[in-house]
Length: 144
Image (cartoon, rainbow, N blue to C red; front, side):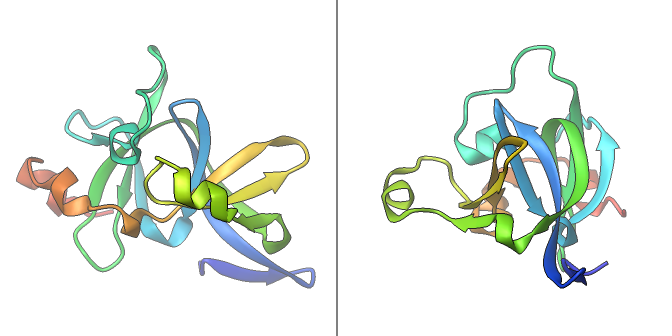
């Protein structure tokens, strides 16, 4: 499946939506190789983004992320949903927010009348090498 599909004269972006702390977030689906139950050695997304930790008792899942490199394990909170966003829902960050945000990798917002705004993340903007450096070797060799 391509990240972009044409459907009913609208351009769609396929994303995987999840919770990071108290925020609804999404990444392009083409970067997600697999979804697993929680892997103990996975890196919490909140730590990578600079967000407060997930609420205690949150159900956690592991996304295997990577396109042309060995995947790395990223822990997120449920619900984890594959969905399409119409490009009309996507908004760039206003300049003021861009200058002052402390959420690393934040690239834009998805707005939907029926839900809270979703933070669109570019995981390639993170320094992922540092996050996976101390991971056990078996996590860098997981095949989707």
